[in-house]
Image: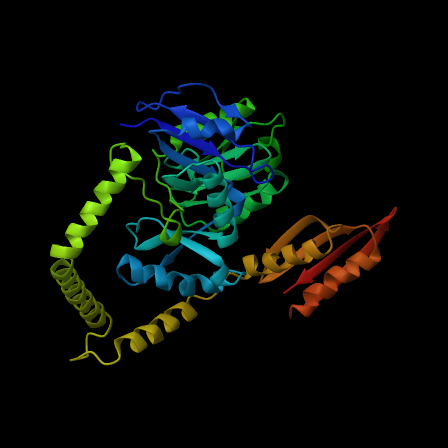
Amino acid sequence: MQDKLIIFLHTYDAERPDWVVLNADNVFRYNVRHGNPADLTDAAQDKEVIVIVPAEDVLITSVSLPKMNRSRLAQALPFALEEKLIGDVDTLHFAQGETQADGSLPVAVVSKEKMQAWVSLLQSWNILADALIPSTLALSAEEGAWSVAVNGMAIVRSGLYQGFACDKDNLKEMLEIALEASESKPELIRIHNYSTHAVSETLNLKIPVKEDFNETDQLYADLAKNAGKLPAINLLQAEYRTKKSRYPKMQKIWKATFYLAMSWVILLFFYPTISYLILKHKVNSIESQIEQIYKHNFPQSSSMVAPKLRMEEKLRSFTSQAGDNKLFSLLGYIGKAMLEKPSIKIKRFDFKNNQLTLELMTASSEDFAAFTDYLSRQGLNIKQQNATMQGARINGIVVVE
């Protein structure tokens, strides 16, 4: 088995990564190294390369769809998840996990802009990665327990293919939301704290909480040990998929001669016949799959009539029934409004009866009014309950629905 090079990319300082090398027995070759990526090119030689990217840049969700092959599933995913997402699906990259026992399919969603930035950065270091995984899915996965890592951010793994990231000041509220939405409540929430401030005493949850403290570098060591060992979703799919050459190293001239000779052989003798056989097999296989899927979804039909159109109509009907998540939709608009007015701070929020109640603090009444006006322009109903002046700041409560 190969040694593994684990690279950690950071949100605000991507060009200064951290990395570590583990041998085939998952034992560290050396301690975590920081900063200069010039050393990575040599470190990556003859190793499996796993890149761990920031959890806050990747949304992990799931969807239930009829059985279909992987390529058709990839085409259906953006439309099946469109109602859950704020951004344009054309700007997003969807990576599939393994179908679960209950029929659900885990999906990781990340912007294409982020994916291209990560891939380009690795290429500039002459790195060809085997896997890109979000740090959420590099946390430990313990049966009956949720894992939380706290450093600059809070990262939560709430299942094999479930988790999220948030600001650690909002950890209590986000855990309460996740626990309320979860069908399977954990018996324990285990907090691995890599900062200097305790967080468990501020949570006050109904679930038991156990917190341990570690050095900052231990976070990377813990994530590295789990990378490649625990279930995860590799973001390098579709157009971002990479394939490393398994040929032995050869001199450039011999390698070029080998490829040239093989190309002539294929062109002169095998290409027409092989192409015909491959295409014929593919066509037969695809037609058979289409017929099976069609009969499964329309058992009363005696023959196939416009299969693509009928399946698209059924898929649209299926996804429209799935509804949307009102809370996360509202939070999306709130996030965009806060980008417009960075002086707005949320002290508390509560979601009940499809209404989001926000307790806000802002530097001026103009910013407060601009914040609510922006939400109103998005078609939301805004009700201001009260507003008070504390020094130079405004405190107010608004209800958004």
